[in-house]
Length: 237
Image (cartoon, rainbow, N blue to C red; front, side):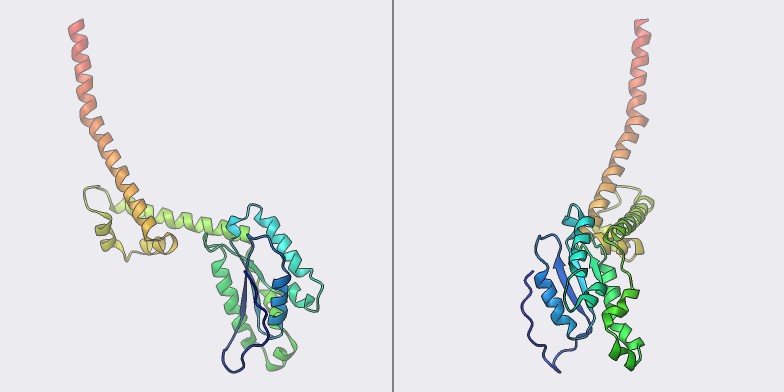
């Protein structure tokens, strides 16, 4: 991402509660332009958050994130104290990791000044106040997200197992029309999308067909084969 030079902010035209600086961590580039942008934003005395993206594309994410944080925290500039405290959140929109943490921290940054007295606001910077909110690391957030996805997927599959017992009952469209307001389906679609929900439904139907065919073989075909084999042995004896 290119950071255009910021000269001035329009007065009495826009209201800004917090700045979110988005940095693509998957690209190898210097942080000098980002630091220049942060320097301009700090002058506004508004809360500033640094959000790194595309962490799912980075092989050594933990090492890369640590190097990035150190390049920000250890910068020798007039903003060193502010850079030491500015929150940095590592995210992945594709994997939905730490997205909720960004929203929570942004809301916290907006609400925090309201909780302070006027004199405190004059003497303190919003970013220093936000160090009380510690966002989860990308590794922990990824692990939590995977656990949540597993639970949501299990609940949806359980719903299919309990209520779709016959592959002849109907199509996905009919099933979705009847069950679309169920919490398990709504939550699954919110997380994975409707197309994925339909794919798992089709897989469940295929499994029911396989079980039905196997049952037919076990109950009808195998007894006939056993009878023929027994009859053949009798004739040979």
